[in-house]
Figure 1 (cartoon, rainbow, N blue to C red):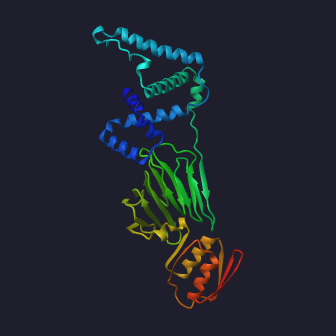
Figure 2 (cartoon, helix red, strand yellow):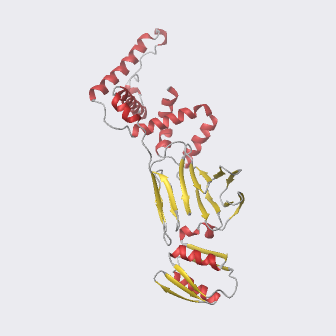
Figure 3 (cartoon, rainbow, N blue to C red):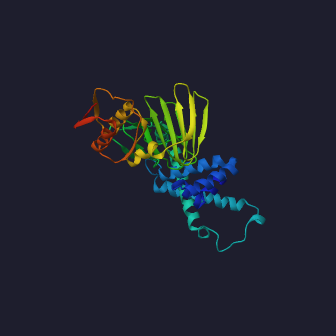
Length: 350
């Protein structure tokens, strides 16, 4: 317990738990690598700090608090009396409460408060039964329709941008060793850093694990391929049923083929893969069917065609925050068709 109290007395450790940043994450990650035997102490100290912030239910009485504090002080006094005289330090002006720094006083008060809560729980069996009852964590689902985009913030402060026709499911609070979410569709994740609780996105069996990272995950229902494009940080990608264990660096993309469980790693075009978050709609050698599907999904319309294209489409173009009418006008000039827009119905005639 002394090792845990030592951690609690360090201001940088408390700040790391309560308000982490990249510098603190890097320091404590290296510290744990250098002291693997102290990882258990780190986890316990984190739990104690979390518990001190949210001790549940009724507070113990003032009399009980005083009794517990008096007992702690009496135990300290007995320890001093039983100690051999040669071990007793000579009195100084710093002995006692005034000898502690302000931060050490805060830690002492927090620890006594936590100890009080524990003893109070033990002395109230009914309360202990209440606390011991498992509380089921409910899952939340958010989804977008065609033509919609949505930005949400998860319970751990991770920010997520959902593209059209996308659904994400996540617990109302993250518990355990991982922060797990499931995804159908396409989303960009800006993960809040927590080195002790990695963030995991599950999409069609593919697991993308990150700590403090930004990346996009997209599953194409038609091709049955899943793409992971890394913008910053580092991710580990695995699959429980396939022999996949890959790491990506910024600027890299992994494409997973669900049919044959094969993967391909390479670079990617930012506008095409992530630019949708900034309003970019990009076509690169797209077929007519691919263009129609993209327009329907992006603008939430239904496209009807009269006749068929006179030749095979191989269309490329980039548009940022353009109206559907502007895009169709540009395409019509190149691909030789006419069109009409009537509310959510688009008719293209060749």
